[in-house]
Length: 406
Image (cartoon, rainbow, N blue to C red):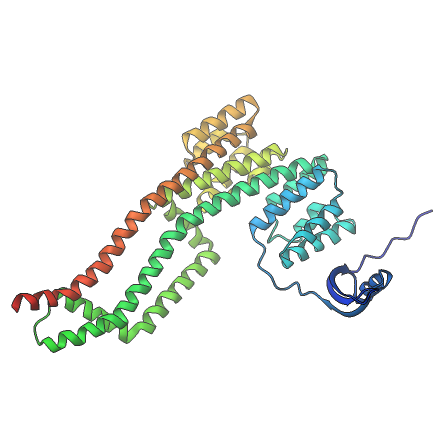
C-alpha cells in the first residue's frame, strides 16, 4: 500500500538557551530545531527548566570565501570516503563551522537533499559559491556512482586554485601597500611639514633654489586642494575598479594589458596557464566530454584572453580538430603545454599529462612570486628614497646656501 508523502520539514534554526538542571545549576547551550517549542520540549525531557530561549542570528559573520568552500569540499569528501552518510556529513560540517553564513548555506543544501533534490541540483541553487564546473563534476559523480572520488578531485582542484590566487595576492599586496603608505607620508609632509619650512625660509629674505620653490608650490597645492586630491584619487580608483568589474570590454582590455606588464605579466600568465590546465585535467579525468569540459575551462583561468581562446578551441574541437592543433592555433600556450597535450592525446592519458603541466606551472608561479618579492624590495626602496630624499634635500638646500654665505 502506498504511503502518504510526508510534508517537507520546517527549516531548522539554531537556538541559544539557558536554564537550570535538576540540581538547580545554571546550564547553557545551543540546539538546532524547527522552533522554540521543540527546543523547550527537548530540554524538558532532559530535565532542564528553561528560563531563556533565543534564535541565534545567522546574518552576521564573515562572508563565505572560496577557501571556505574548498575546506568544506575536502571535509565532505573525507567523511563520505569514510562511509559517513551524505546528510550526516553535511550536519557534521555545518555544526563544526565557525562561520554562521556557511552554516546556514550548508543547512539549506542539506534540507534540499533531504527532500529529494539531487546534490548537484542543490548546489546549483547557490551559483555564487558553486560554479558550473563544481556542479558539473558533482553531477558526473552522482551519475557514475563515484561521488566520493570526484569530491576529492574537486577538493584538490580548489585547494590548488586557492593557493595560486593567494600567491598572486601576496605578490601584489606588498608593493601596493608600500606605495599607499608612501603617498600618505608624502601628503603629511606636504600639508604639515613643508609649510613650517616655508615660514622659516620667508624670514631669510633670500632667493630660494628652484627645487625648493617647486616643492613649496606642490605643498601649497596640497594644502589648498587636499580634499580634491584625496577625493579624486579615491573616486578614480573606485570608478576604475567598478568599471573593471562590470564592463566586459574593460575586463578584456585590462587582461590583455596585464599580461604585457613587465615581471607581473609573466606571473599572471603562468598562473592562468596553471589554472587552465588544472581545470581541464580535472574535468576530463572526471569523465566529462572534452567539448563539454571546455565550457568551464575558460572562465576558470581567470583571464579574458584565455577565455576567448578557449571558445575558439571549443569550436574547432567540436568540428573534429585535435585539442593540440586547436591550442596551437590560438597562439597563447607555451610549447611545453602543447607537447604535453600532444603526448596525452596520442597515449590516451590527456588528463594525466595536463595535470603534470599544471604542476609544473604551479611550481613556476611559486618561483616567480619569490623572485618578484626579492626584486620588488630594492625597487621600492629606490623609489621611496628618491621621492622622500628629493623632498628632504630640496628643503635643506636653502640652509646649505645660507651656511655658505655665513
